[in-house]
Length: 102
Image 1 (cartoon, rainbow, N blue to C red):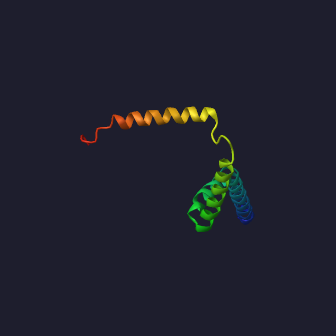
Image 2: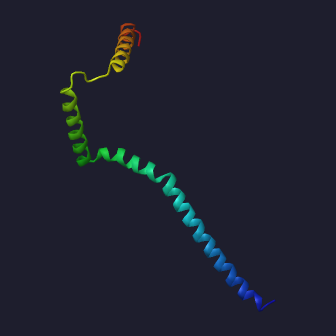
Image 3: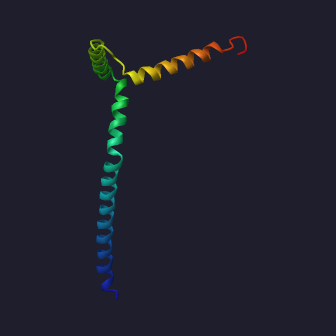
């Protein structure tokens, strides 16, 4: 039994290392599949704080705005109806606002 012990220990460590590598690889793959895309999207949103990204965003926004100004109708009819309802509701709520009561 003493002679078998070093072989058992060697076999145990080989299995332990193999299982550890397998677990690390599985965790890495799952992380990349599940969270990788979300992290890229979050990075894209957070990159707006960088000066170069703001310039690119501003240029793209201005380009789209100019393109829409060339159209006859910038907003669809359904959207206009919704905006009008929201505007009337907000105007009504501001009309009911009591400034003296704080």
